[in-house]
Image (tube, rainbow, N blue to C red; front, side, top):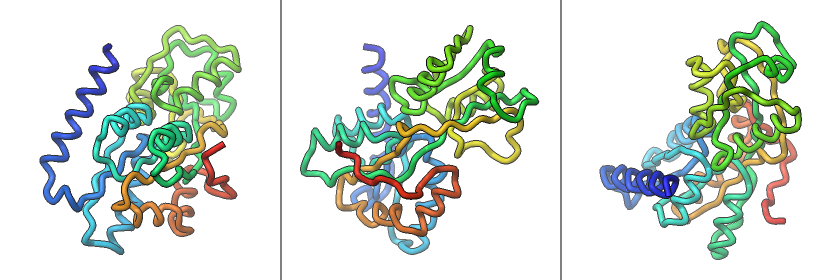
Length: 246
C-alpha cells in the first residue's frame, strides 16, 4: 500500500510539472533511469544544437517507478531504462510499439571513500558496518548490488536502500554510509578512496520509443557520434546485442 501511495504522489507531481510547462504539446518528455541522467542531459544539449526548436524535458528516477508511471499513462515519449526487462514488459503490454533496443551496458562500482586501498574493495567491504545500495526492488543497479553481496557471502550490519542509484552516490559521497554501490559513470576524478568496477550483463540498458515525437532523439542516441560519447561517459557500447526480445 505504501509503495502504491508513493507512486501515486510521484505521478501526480509529474502531471503538475508538465501542466506548468509551456507548449507541452510540442515538448518531448524523456523518462530516464537516474544513472543515465547526467549523460542524457549532455546528449540533449548536443541534439538541441542541431534542433534548436525542440523542447525536451528529462525526468529521472528508478526504472521500476518510471515503468509504473508509463503503465499508468504518464505522457512520456521515450523511456531509457537501466535494464532490459522493464522496456520489454512495456512492449509486451503494448505490442504496437517499436521493440526496445539496448543503447548501453552500465558498470557498477563499489566505492569506499575513506579506504586507502585502490582495488579489491570487496575485501575491504567485509570490515564495513554501513553500506548504501539502490533499492533492489525498483532499481536494476540495486538488484545487481544485492547479488554481488550474496555471491561473496558478505553480510553488512546496516544496509541503506536508496531510492535510486543517483541517491546511492550522494549518500556515499556525503558519508551517510561508509561504502556504497554506485554507477561507475557517476564517479568523478576527485572521488578518492577504493573503487572496484563490476561488469554484469544484467546491466544492459535498453530504451523504448513510446511516441513518434521522440523518434529524432531516439535515432540520435543510437548514432555513432553519441554511442562514442556514452562510451566515454563510463558505459560499454562496443559490439552490443541491440535486441532485447528473447
